[in-house]
Image (tube, rainbow, N blue to C red; front, top):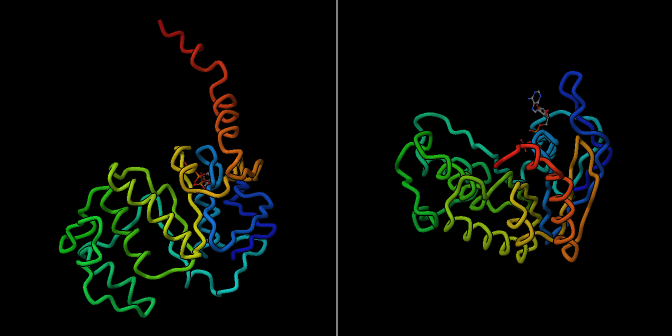
Length: 226
Ligand SMILES: Nc1ncnc2c1ncn2[C@@H]1O[C@H](COP(=O)(O)OP(=O)(O)OP(=O)(O)O)[C@@H](O)[C@H]1O
């Protein structure tokens, strides 16, 4: 369980997160949606201990970062480190020995190639594989479906179902509603640094309709397409 209490975060004068309160339980999958710049990644970075902040983020396991796998939208890799070495590095950090990494290479990545030379989707799949093999309890996946192929999207969806069955806590952001309705128990709408709506599975369809109406309005007509 992760409990976030009165979390606020500013970059200079820009108040990005405003008194956020939310709880993430075991065995549940949470979707975080919101417009570009709403503060989703900043929230994730605060939970992962990558940012300082005002407020409190607590969990039974401390420090949270030792039990957390964070998949960033654009994972970064140092030059001259192969995919295999990257996985080994992350597993060593958790004292986990993987006898045969190739056997666990479910996305068929070229593990002997430098990770920095991977395509965008391959980088995401490598970073995801590594945090899964670390055996984390908490997973934060920032846009995990974006930029990966259809086959991998199917695999990632199944992985999320499996993590839930294993009683892990999973937090996902996505700009594609269907990816969240397939996987999440709850969806929380972040707008301008505050949660403005929280919805359980039974109400996902209504939320999607509401968001569509809020978003589209008469924008398309304004284009004057003929
Ligand atoms: N390192 C930083 N320094 C200054 N401002 C930042 C920094 N990181 C993020 N911001 C600002 O914080 C706000 C929220 O950014 P954030 O990346 O959390 O949004 P997001 O909801 O993840 O957006 P997106 O959907 O585009 O990924 C934006 O105004 C952004 O410019």
